[in-house]
Length: 293
Length: 281
Image (cartoon, rainbow over all chains, first blue to last red; front, side, top):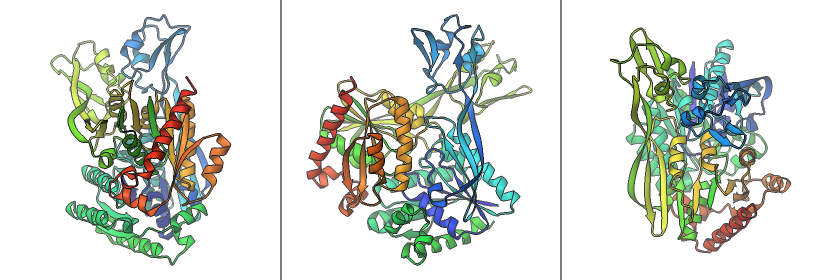
């Protein structure tokens, strides 16, 4: 089974539009949205949710005021500043609590509970292109990396059960916790770059991250015609890093128009230049030796 | 005054707003880039970097001469960063959250702290604009400690502009908490609207006054405006979708420099922020 992760480093370069376009032309695949912080793929794939499950992310400390003797040890021990001194005594700031449980274990009065927290939800759905797994992390929650690992694992289970041999994962922006959770053990990464100084800077960092985790990368440049110099610079950087540039997508207002209609670019206009280019990119990805090992 | 610039969705123009606002103000202002996974502000403001400071997190160092393999450190660690098998102690620094539990619980004083570099802070200035940026090391997981470190440089008598990362989880909250005003930036598309709604929910949890900038106005539809109206979310500025602005950005240039007529608009944006933030106190 192969898993292609679509990443970008910089946000807003077109990861989700490109991932959804792949969904429309790929065969025998499961879609996975690993951007659990701000999931958008569902807006184009219109999933029919079959199963909804709570995500139990982690634990949070909770001081029981009846048992607490106000000794202040928890306040002293907490490295995250999550134990606040209030007029009513010590209280936990849930947003700051890291869930390390140090105060829970070391409280001499056993006055701190450690309930497990529901940090979000995840979904298994049917879409017009095949099965999909996505999730919604609760606002201001931690453990996005755990939830990313979970949706990827569920996508894999579905692929195995239905004998589908490909998973396309729409990844989160950045290079931190959720991105690292989405890259481990993947077959390949497609980096969607944009021809701006920041697009180049961020593409380099995500390419270095892929190399760090030994996952082969490919690059495509979205809106390549916005700035030829930056497109050249990205191509050169890719070459220096031994990364194949699998295609350059022109700026096309049809992407926004299709998004408004909740469609992929292929459903909006199968014959547009952007559609033809993405088809070419997809063929190149599928022919890349790393996808055929 | 602390102004955090956030968005939910990535690539909507947070850095454009942050850098141009700082440049338009020109003095008594500092820009703090808290998008430590992909910091970009320096590419536009082009400050002279004068100092680099590593961001260090403490991780456990185990003295095997003192260790009796009692496993108390392994048991307290919720992150699986310590494993003891027989008479072998293994630590996994990349999993450590630096909670200090292992040190506090060890009955033999066999655990001490060792430094691990998570990233760095870059400090400098462009004329009278102070600049601080955090940068996560490639391969490191934890952004929030670096964000918190960047924010220790906030100055009370300055206008502090915080460029936040995209999303709504812990790194974003770390970039917004304690701000006097949160400026949300979005684009008028279905993705922009969906992620704006999430960002507004996050801002409401923190209870901080906020307003909206619509970037690339004209590319999508009116749904963002309708939502803003319904939510009583003031629209403080609109930047039209304009090829010249997009090209200026792509080259790493500031809009207020390339198109000086925008300076007044950014100053006007600041005045509105000042007024809205002041209404609370």
